[in-house]
Image 1 (tube, rainbow, N blue to C red):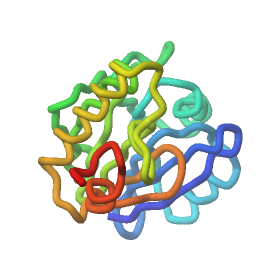
Image 2: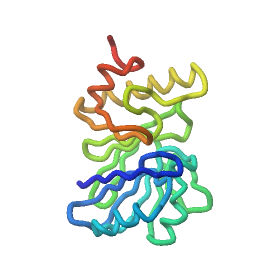
Image 3: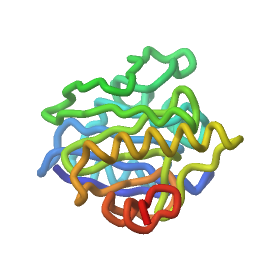
Image 4: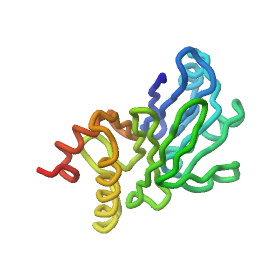
Length: 187
């Protein structure tokens, strides 16, 4: 698996491109914008975007879908319908295959009802549910408690060396979060 990162400038959110070594069918995660730099990244590595994974259905994570679909024939996977586009709704606890990759889906309920996280190999794409050292910014104490509970439940099933790729900010690891994140550590 090859993983590439792109910063979507209109929203300052992370977009990830996942594909096989040497090119081929690829997955794009949270395309906030489809700009020239992202198109060049896709083309330079000989990928064809076949699938779009959305962790959270707001514009900062979906703004590039319309443009992507003008260039590539891609399926969309999300926790809720994405505008007028054909969409496959996914739910926490599900698993499916795309382009040779097994994808596990985890609920990020608490952040929003439709928010999901995707695990591909040893990488967890967490969306806005968690970023390095912080759980997602939620609207109330109940939502925060629910999100923390979901994250702890998810993390208990994953290896400590799992890499976490958030929608905003730098990557982190499950081990770092469970040891040093004040909301998740047992210290």
